[in-house]
Length: 247
Image (cartoon, rainbow, N blue to C red; front, side, top):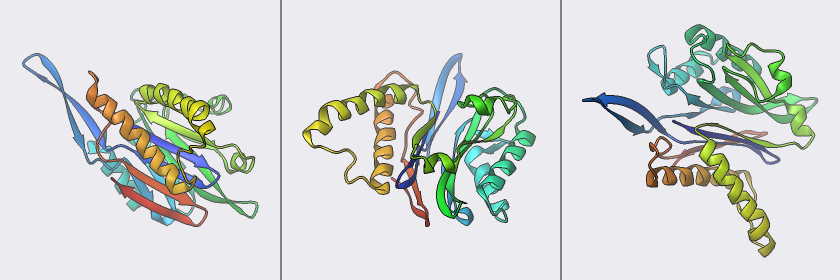
């Protein structure tokens, strides 16, 4: 299981991911789970000043998904644009994975692009299954992997920002809907700002806090603790990658 977050803000792009991977085994007729940590679900693409994270199945072509992704990044260092990278990844996934399962695997790809003389953020979600955007669904075959540009740069210019979450996010979504309502209705009227100061770094740390909070809840519950381990964050502004750390 996984929890990855990508937030496009007025300050830039903040990405975060946990580092746990869960495997299932049968021992004497009893089903169990093994959780390993240290998986690189969020990685920089230095030659594009971009970031990419992954959710879903743990292997591609018999290789751990994070290692497969690391190899893909290395082998495509001649690519010059995010759009070209997204389509190349889409095509390799169609070849390597095909149509095995709906909503089984996906990648968040984010960075800045030139648009009408400005540097603006953009976000691609390369995955199989339906897109959350109805207009994109009308143009794709959801049985295939598609490089969906869910957040084009002109949307950011219009001042519309968003967070995208994938993996095992249902508990996270319900929990932080309540938390955000509490902050907005009860905490901010007292003059308390979370995160503070509002910067790209503090936004990334807030995403780390969110994932760690969900991870601790998993540990204390009867759920398989499939979200966990150190949390990796990556931040990007119009000048490029500004931070990348795991803690």
